[in-house]
Image (spheres, rainbow over the protein chains, first blue to last red):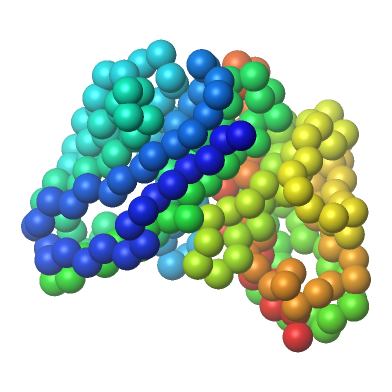
Length: 116
Length: 115
């Protein structure tokens, strides 16, 4: 069965600090897809990144970076020089490779508060 | 380019009543999924519609049903509402071409309160 764990329920940092959000997943498939979404107070889940299981390259997009390690089944997300606008709930999600129904399994989320 | 739109944004219902939520997918998308997000939790998959049929279903009772129309828009119906159905209901759309693994895009959701 597929499962996503985000052990950090809430994190508070001061603006300009770096912060890493952890994500650990479980799946029996060799082909799968990992995602990060941001949920501001408005409720809409905003797509941040998609990574497939065959691509372990780390990715950087501006202040955001992602570290994918299959050996530890982790897909961690780092925000560099955090800003108040980064305050939101962040979800890690998993979709298995044979799943044409695209049933996403989400973690419980990490609430990030960036203080001025 | 309109994103995923949902209506209504907020509603309050009484236990035992029925509710219908509506969703229009992002332009160019043909697949619609529904998720339930209880307070403080991650979204839980309810079901997905493609070509006007339910393609996959999560662990939700038959009180939850849906429909997809020829223009790809979708409805979620919940009968015999329970207090525990209070949640944010999120619609997500995607394009079937290139699946699996396609990114899904979410609307802002419908906040349902059952009293």
